[in-house]
Length: 184
Length: 175
Image 1 (spheres, rainbow over the protein chains, first blue to last red):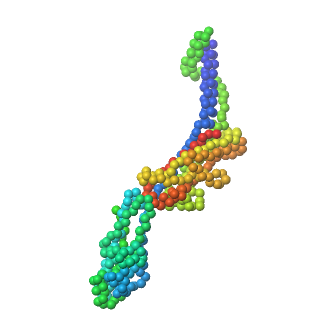
Image 2: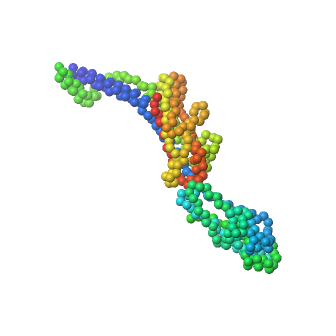
Image 3: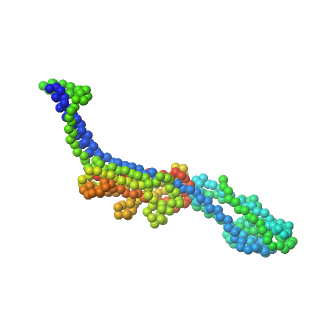
């Protein structure tokens, strides 16, 4: 009799437990919020554009007024620096000019000239900045800005260069001007 | 009599574990709720960080619908009625710790009609699942994002950074 009673009790306990479990699962299963996530990641890259254009389309007369030591110079080129997404800390960029005297293989003369830097194409003489070979132009970029800097380049003879130029006639005088960008 | 019954009950509980192997028959009665079989799953679509400046689909000015970032799916079994379920979206701006900058964006839900519906942070969607009709047992939505107008401008000026991140949380609130 005792074993029979124990058996009945086991059944009841089991059934009750299972029913309670199913009830709880049905009630809370429907209302329990479920969720999932999407991690969205990205990046921004910085870009630097540095372009040097030659604006001289033909050979120029070295004895013209514009190339004289007091003239406004002959327009020869332009450089443009654009910095997208500059770094958080201000960054300095340097534009350096390197060039030698005008030379000609036929004659042994070296005609000295000086590079003139200006913001516009037709600047007045007093707003021109003389840049000797090795000189550097400094640009500081600020955070959260697109910075575009451009300068026009002209050339005019020095006093010594004019004296040399007046010695002998010759064609195909030339000089290479190297414009170099560097940064901190 | 009460004492005897109590003792017998106590003996019954104590002997439950000892004589468990003597159980010969067990009948279990129960039911399964329709709602208990609804499951939400979320699947990201992008495995790599996205180029925030050069990806044209991401930009505000683009005529498209943005970049697909993931899909959520409701799976259901044994549903015999038509039920409405609520999905909630939570997300914040893309943030970079390295540069302490933020880029706002808008989440778009592509609905069954093919249209794209903008979902701001805390917005919800109601999904009707008709368990009485034959179906494959799932309902899903693709999610897309586009930068806001301001953010599309900012990506051209903000400092370079590789750690922009935002978490989109999709929650099934229930029926």
